[in-house]
Image 1 (cartoon, rainbow, N blue to C red):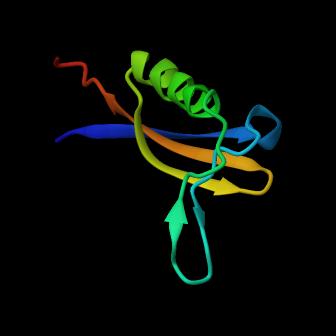
Image 2 (spheres, rainbow, N blue to C red):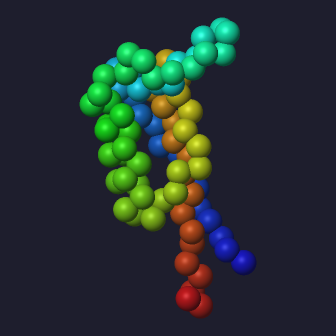
Image 3 (cartoon, rainbow, N blue to C red):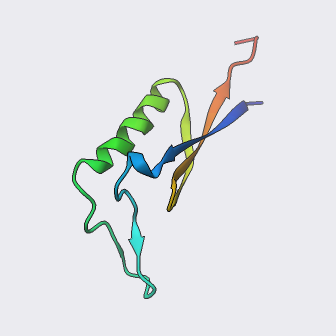
Length: 79
């Protein structure tokens, strides 16, 4: 049976200016207005954790920044 460990990392809003997927009350969503360099900041975070074997499970944005939930497969002693 596969086993996993989990981690949650937080990244302050100071790291990002406007890396958020905005939705209006009518349900219209888009990325208009996000500076071109800011998605790369998020890509760098994802790639850094991925290099260490962590898989992104979920990302949650809020006014203070974002939380990223990760999972990592545990290697059994038999492998």
